[in-house]
Image 1: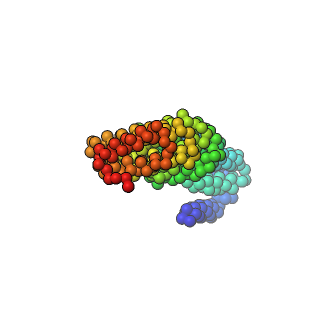
Image 2: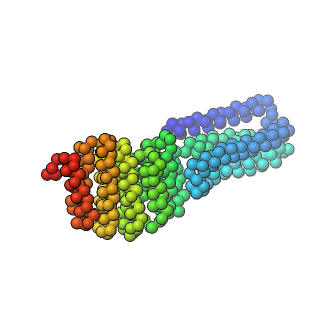
Image 3: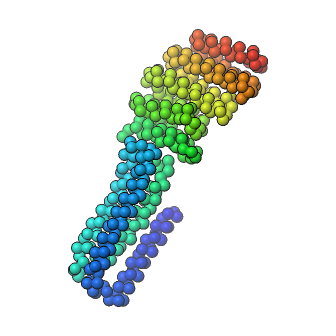
Length: 359
């Protein structure tokens, strides 16, 4: 509402300015002297074209360099349609200026000058507003642009994951924007049955996980990450991408460990490792080899948590709580050799830590 009021006030001021100027010309009798406007039309028309060209070229050059350095050439190509609007305005102004300049020595010189002045003032506010909006483009605007310019849903998800990773690696990430982008990606992946196998998607997601686990990126909301990780694992399992799923299990373990640096392991182990792996495998009845591999990685995760316990980073009570969560989660898992090894490890840890009885 405020924006519309500001626009209305701007154009009222422009209208009043034109009326006052026309009244001055009328009082001075210049509107009946076309020769007075011969040179003003030429100089003013030339200045307008050059000013509009500079106003468009300089900010857009800076914007393209910034966007390319931040998002890469591939993403910038999707924003090329953003240049159509200002160049359309420039074309209109240039054509009108050329036409009015051709009327400099005619009896219509006064009207040509006023028309050129009116067009210049009318198109200036939307152009400046558009440039400011473009230069201050936020994550939501970027995602919206990607959605309209992406060739397919898979392409949009891959591009969104790439943008999300870049925002998470910023020195001062916008928590609200990152959560909003995660929700958008989750919404786009809600029907994983319809998603086509698109390697670029899981490569981008792997880069995102790597940014969290290795590059020290910002840690987004754990529940949003949990849902996203579970959706990706379900997508891979449904499409029989076992090798990729194993790689993701390893990354999930590393992501969980990264979250444990800031939160208690008992708050993380189920949400960011067990649910996105074993939880998905239970629902989809995944292959035994995947369950076995996830169990091996779970043992590895418990050993790392145990090492933190031995160093004094977490208490024995917290370690016991983690063991209880894992033990409960594997209570209904098929009796594989790896599962039996896990249970023996849990029982041994319970004895060493003198944990409370299970029941």
